[in-house]
Image 1: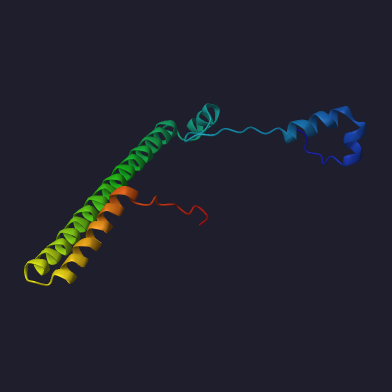
Image 2 (image 1 turned 90 degrees about the vertical axis):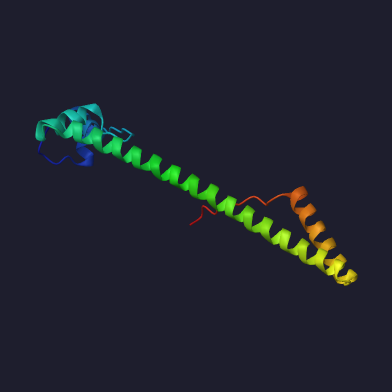
Length: 138
């Protein structure tokens, strides 16, 4: 490689300068969790156990990511179950209040309570839970 500075006008008239300039602009790109194998060899020349350290780091990071995904899914399932139990408890409570009101002679308030709870529950089972839309703009 040359140590001299190449000017624009030199590139246009000098074919050797064009080749030098082309080689300077050459770029390599590699995507992935590990460096390119040729770079791993260069790292190994500097630090003898660096390829093993890179592999261990990638394996541990993958294991950690999978563990987080499992925890996230488990938490979501637990959250949904808790919500279902709370909704069930609320529905049974409201229906019980309506039924007790009817049996104690308060037929109109008890019937209204039973009717509203029956319509609400039917609506939930027919329509279902609205989908959760994630906002990825953050």
